[in-house]
Length: 394
Image (cartoon, rainbow, N blue to C red; front, side, top):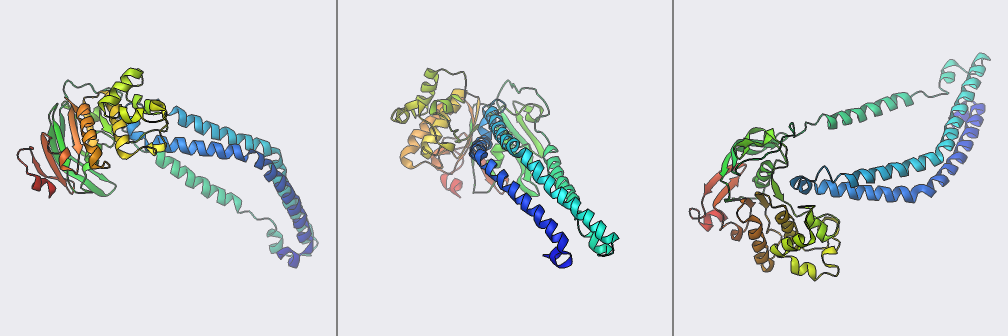
């Protein structure tokens, strides 16, 4: 419209260029439609695999499977990459023509503008307006923003600075004046705690007091910012992060058998069944249509909270690690199923060092040591005989 008022010749050149460009664009879109189903299917698969890997990373880390479980994610990304490339290659020649049409249109307009300026038909300012030159600045800003984001990710410090495996002679856990916070918010302040080998410690406290963060620091999903976490007298920072087991109910989109076998990939079918029996989940598994080969929905969505808990306990039993950390293992279980779950936990933790977060007194009363956390600090500490129920409830 601007060109039509200022100079009708430019309007004609522009309309011809736009007409050719739109025709080629329509052909490109028609070509892309043929490849869209494959691209969307690859996108969906990539999203599912990536989300499952991210949501299950604590389980992967706890069972030392993080490195070997990236294959499906990489394969999904590669499939998406190939689908995108197939779509791009199909329309690449037309895209070049599409780009050339507008570049040639711009060249014709510049030639016409120069000719009209020389002939005195238009002023210099109108001549210079015929071709916009802002795309380069926009692209430079876009690339700078993306590079800044890339640097922010690649500059994140790695937790493991050593490839040494932690092999302690005993499994005493000691927190020596540890502190930790997320960004500027302090969550754990100067906490000291000792859990002797083979004993149990119950951590209680109100929501948001720092109980789960404390367990994540012991499991080394985070590193403390002050103080030390010692296992068998050795600072866990000096070794790899695969030393502890963290009880997590996340289940992968796979069969029940494979979810249990995740604790020990080389386990036989008989060992999987034995672990399930000890975890009090063999009977309900056998009652399912496909038994141990029943597919579990994403995140265990096809199972109840108690069933997911017991399957994850069977997985931990199969791993048979010397230290177990349970984060509110009975929180999502109704009272009718709590007895079976407590029996499963008893099988899992027999003779091991146990740290458990709990709200219910049934999971606290048998602990050798009870620690109350409030606002990131230890407000009370004692034995099961030295702390009454009312004190714990408060």
